[in-house]
Amino acid sequence: MRRCLLPGLFYLLLFACNPFPHAERDLKTAPYPMPTSADRGRSVLILATTTSTQDSGLLDVLLPVFQEETGYLVKTVAVGTGQALRMGMEGNADVLLVHAPDSEREFMRGGYGKDRAPVMYNDFVLLGPGNDPAKIQFAQDAAGVFRAIAHAEATFLSRGDGSGTHARELQLWKQAGVDPANQPWYLESGQGMGATLMIAEQKSAYTLCDRGTFLAYRGNLSLKILFEKDPSLINVYHVITVNPQKWPMVNYAGALAFLDYLTRPSTQAVIGSFGVEQFGEPLFTPDAGKNEADPGLP
Image (cartoon, rainbow, N blue to C red; front, side):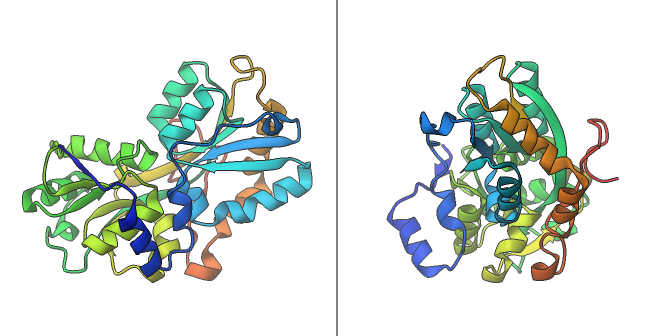
């Protein structure tokens, strides 16, 4: 049976000891808040998005401009991609910003989404303690990393929350030919990326993280990037409008305005420069205009 690290006093102690600026948001991701009747006004737009866009600080930059230009009030629900897609399927969000392409395509095939467009990408990185007990830095590919962790029985912390990051991690275990379930070295946080990083730090565990969130939290971590830049680690984000034919009460006009805003050249330029001043490199790379067969890297 997989061990799931449930929130409670343990997390409260971690928060008291670790100055992670956005971590509290991660503890509020499940279950998601249901929209009220007031949220269904024409001027309100409900955005269901991944925790990484929130934890990185990107939305703090993008949303004020959109709200000022359009007059919409954006209500953001930061959850894992799985929960964000479920919100869309249940008509409890107007627009989604997510990063699990296989699940997104299934969402679109089910008629839950109306429009879908690439916005940006970054990549996943494998983090671990500096002494690298599983020696993953010498792996030839991402699958080799996961085989090395399993062979060494080194502690690995999964988000275990149905997010896009969790989905990619499970994909990589499958590619490695390893089933980590029921292994004592395999732990699940059941939390967003920020809280998962905190726990991995405390346990000196390996974990999979999107680069943007790692850069935003790097100053408070001793964990190092031990493996990166493998083609299987590309992490593409799409914006999806919820289909008004399926859910007539959604704010489709606002959702379409948000899609147009994220993919226009001026916003893409902001995305491309975000993080450079603070971290010395961008947290995301603009990706608007790409087709499904050519996501991510040019």
